[in-house]
Structures are given as structure tokens and as C-alpha cells.
Image (cartoon, rainbow, N blue to C red):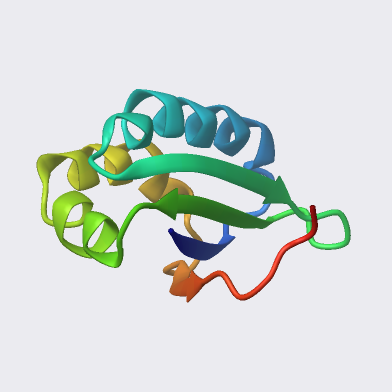
Length: 100
């Protein structure tokens, strides 16, 4: 399983609207994508405009090809993209270890 980690910075004062938009986008778009296995989204306490989105995929290609090169990506960005103060920083990770 692959972890996609997106570090998101939104425009100041848009937290409530973004909270609703990201949850809607995750449920309406991302959860229906090939290879999708789950998500977590956390919002900053010290930096309230910062969010960390974690999406779990079966393979790297499920994110980089199947999702990113589909119409679903444009739909996702139409829901959340206007909130971004800067482009999200996105990286992928393999699991090394975890707690039980």
C-alpha cells in the first residue's frame, strides 16, 4: 500500500468553507477512484490554514496515472483548488513499520 501525503496551505479565513469542500471532494470523488483504500485529513492547530491530507492507494500508479490522468482529478480540483494559497506539496511513501 502507498501513502500519498499532501501538505496543503489555504487562503486565510477560508477554513470553514475548505473543511466542507475537502470532505465533500473526498467522499464524492476520491473514494470512488481505482485503488483507493482510505484517507485521513488533519488540520493545523498552530497554523490553522495548513492541512495534511493522507490518502492510501494500492499502488503508486493508482494515484499518479489512474487518478491524476482521469476526469476525476479535474473534478477534485474544481472542488478544492480555489482554496489553495500555494500548490500542495505531494509526496508518496512506503510503509516501513507501524504500531499494533
